[in-house]
Image (cartoon, rainbow, N blue to C red; front, side, top):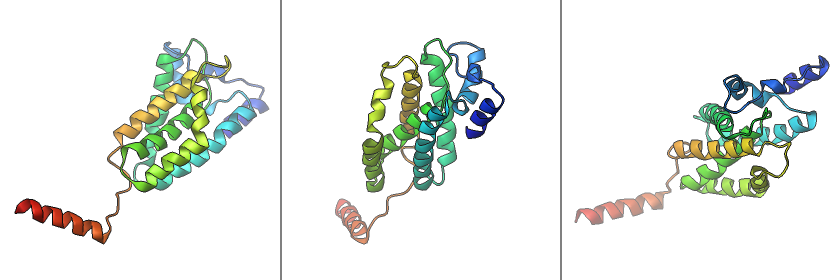
Length: 186
């Protein structure tokens, strides 16, 4: 993303026309390109920090499937934006940011793991205000991209609800399970 923006500025180019243009055949290219294109360095910076933070969380908690999560969020958020977006070029990685935050929040709700539930609360604390970005408040901001990212995160979390870190059982939990099983046999 930083290389693309730097190249764009250094060569006096504008890549916005490679963004998602909803419901057009040429706009499909934006599903692949738009997360790498940003309107300004401020726009780029505002996506970089959350991507790094949320990406690190996904890598840490989902070591086996992190790349599948990224790939599905990338594709689903782009397709969702292509379907629901208003007729305009949409650029930026905000859909991925929303997708990652939603994935981490919802996976914590779907799985019965204390650490993931705690992570969900941290996501709410850090990124709870993202909900306002899904409202059509500012014409320059693609609230549709934010909404598509959030929906993609929900879908991917539901898809992976039974994967990830396995809950560790303590010895006393094993004993309770064994007692319950023995009681059912009699």
